[in-house]
Image 1 (cartoon, rainbow, N blue to C red):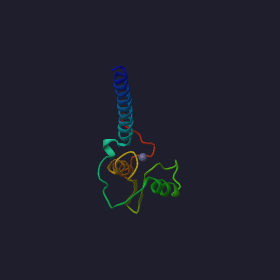
Image 2 (cartoon, rainbow, N blue to C red):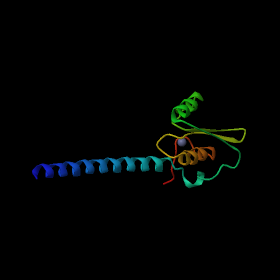
Image 3 (tube, protein in one colour):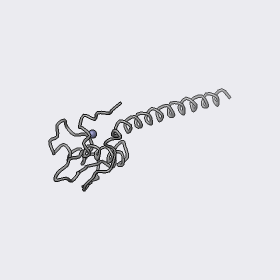
Image 4 (cartoon, helix red, strand yellow):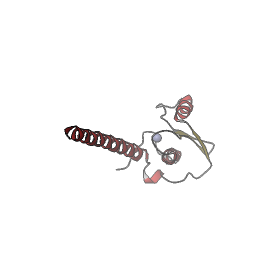
Length: 119
Ligand SMILES: [Zn+2]
């Protein structure tokens, strides 16, 4: 009986720790995704052609940094050339492709690289 109770306590503790970790991971992902969201004034479709490239995060990081941005690019990037909005998006990183698309199109819409949010 005591042995059984001990197992139940261990199971409850392990479950509680797992739930706690899942909760923290979910919160940090939500926070990360919220930080990627552009301010409303830039969060709209680009008025022009959009050239979108979706790839792995390793490829996206390498491509974005090969363009010698300042400051160095993260996992996605964008630039406007001849009126076309070019965006490079990762499809295997922490946020959905949609989130990176809104973020990078907002840069094409004029959102500065230092990500000001009007609070
Ligand atoms: Zn950005």
